[in-house]
Image (tube, rainbow, N blue to C red):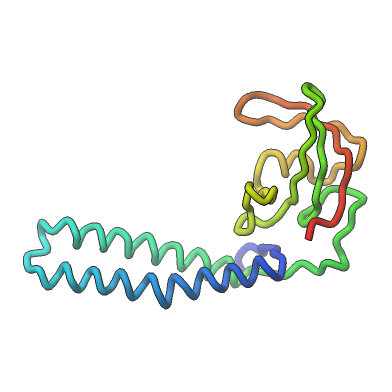
Length: 159
């Protein structure tokens, strides 16, 4: 079987909604564009046809990837989320030791990540650096601008 992908109940709903949109709205729209491009005649040098075929290929790849994600999706049992060490679905408050600024992130599955809402993917360098750590632990996290030392201030259930 494929990779197990842990998601919240909302995350699973979003995956299903995205897949429904792609299959029932986007796919027919692209097929229609391809049909219209073919009706215009010679497709050997038809940029509209080429663009629609490229879009179709990308959409089909996205659909296949989403179907794989859904096949491996497991809803996280919120009653089993603990806060003694950092894990997925935790909201973690960290303090930048260099400049004393604090920030809070909820660690979520890749598909649920949304930086505007403070939700970061479990696959990001920050999340990877925090996983398994406890309140009071100091961690050095490599980010594009260098290495930043953080202290974990709080761990709570992030849903």
